[in-house]
Structure formats: structure tokens, C-alpha cells
Image (cartoon, rainbow, N blue to C red; front, side, top):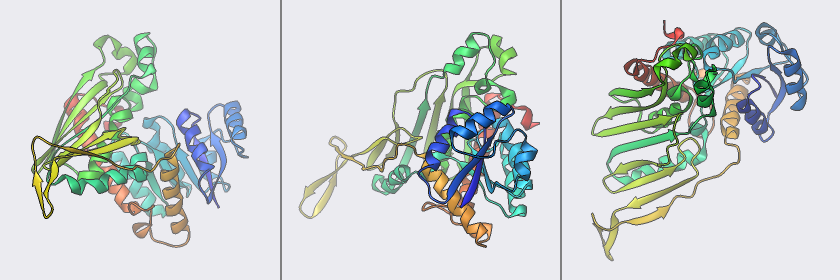
Length: 361
């Protein structure tokens, strides 16, 4: 049984612990919070036994095998390194770190320590997403992809009211791209690999907010990524609602996706029609629609947690990290490659948007 502790008491950590109840081979030990009463209350609520009030205490605990890090983005790097130094496996909420350099440092530390480090990126472990990936061959030569995720954040109201919030704060390595745009970036990398070039533009929060945001920060943005013979655009927003679906367009048809972070519905709009009993014709005027059956889970965090636990269990049994299995959709090393390529793309996007974090220096 793998004993898991958590850092943070936010709603995302609550969701992770709800998923834990549905995953075999793992039990909750306790949570870390700087507030002792909050740590004790959160731990008791979820039937843990060991609340923690300091990172050093957690990292040194003999009662913990692995740690889920659900704290603000800017803290992931330091907390992951501390836990790894204490011999703990780490499941780090997206984005893994503030930039690619920090990701490499954590992965290298994990490699030296022989522990698992994995980014908690839900779609990459979700069977529904991979059902979409399996449908791509039907599209013929793919020419364009448009991935979208935009949801108005109540935290933006906090900024407009003159208050500071972690979601729009350069010192916390946040903003629209880091918080929500990543759900378009990592699926793109998983489906098509790293682009050969990319550029980006952003709608930055108004200049008068910068005393509260710590500098220019994105409320919405677009990334244009180029591939050989294909183009992709990624749209993200925390200050508007995007009501359009994502879609991937091939010469034979289009895959339409509702909910790129947790696919809820998808269908193929194909321009292939059967012209005769023994031939197939192609029409530019006529299309046929076919729904794709998607597996469903009330809490898709069960998949990333189960894959993490599999990787941890394998390494505890003596499997080298380079050979560690991590669920049905890839080895641990594959997910590391996707995370690194994604953060590299996001670093370049922020550079062209004019959004910088203290961690970049």
C-alpha cells in the first residue's frame, strides 16, 4: 500500500482525494498546511492520521511514500525538490513547474533519487482523450487543429475589485496560459509532438492592475504552432467564456471535440460517401456524422492517480525509472517528454506575449 500525503487544501486537492477512494493500492496519510488547525481539520475530514505544518517535516516523515503537490504553481519546484530529497515520489499538479528549466531540474533530481515524478495532467491519462486520438487516422492528412478552452474566472473579479489573487500573479507563475491554456498545449503535444515553430499573442490585463498582478499577465491568448504541412491554433481565456468546440481538420473529415480538458462529446464530420457497392467516393458538398463513444468518469483524476501509483509500485519492486510503466497510454518517460516539450512551448509563448515570472531569471 502506497501512503500518500498532499500539499494544499484547495478544491483540486479535494478532487484528488475523492479520486483516491476509487483507486487501489493507495491510502491517504495527511496534508500539509502552514495553518496547523487547517492541516488537522483537512486531514481528519479525509480520514488521514498525520497532519503536517512544515515541508521539512513532511519530506522527512517515515509515514509517507509519495506526495501530491497541489499548491500554487510557483511553489511546485521547491516543494518537489524537497520531497524528492526526502525520498518521496511526487505527483505534481499542472503546470509541473513555472518553466522548462525547473522541470528539468526536478526530473534530474528524481532520476538521481530513483523516485517517480509525474505531472498531474488529466487528459493525457484519460481513456476518453485517447479514444479521440485513435480516431485521427480516419481524417486523412491532417491540415489544421484548433484547440480551445476559455472560462471566466471569479478570480478576475477579485483583480477588478482591487485585490490580489494567486490566479493572476506573476510571482505565482500564473495567468491564463499557465492555468487553463496548458489544457490545449499538452493535448497538442501528445497528439502531434513539438511544433517546428510557434508564436503567441495575448490580451494582457489592464495596465492599472499591475500593482496587484506583479507585472504584465495574460487574461486570454492565442498560440500559433507550425508543423510540416499542418498548422495549429490554441485559444485560452480566464476573462471570457469560449463557447466553441475544439476541432481537428483532415482532408477527409473533421473531428469535433466538446471539452478538451475532459472530453464530454466528440463526433466525426466526414466527407466520405459510399458511391457504389465496390467503390468509395469523396464529396465536398455532402458529409456524414458519426458520434464517437467516449468512456466516462465522474472524476477523471482517477486515471492520472492510478497511473502514478502503477509507476511508483513498479519502481518500489525494482523496475528502473527508464522502464517504469505508467498506465495504458505510455511509459513514465513518455509523459516526461510531453511535459518538457509543453513547458518549452509555453516558455516561448510567454516570451512573445511579454509575460515573465521571477522564476525565469
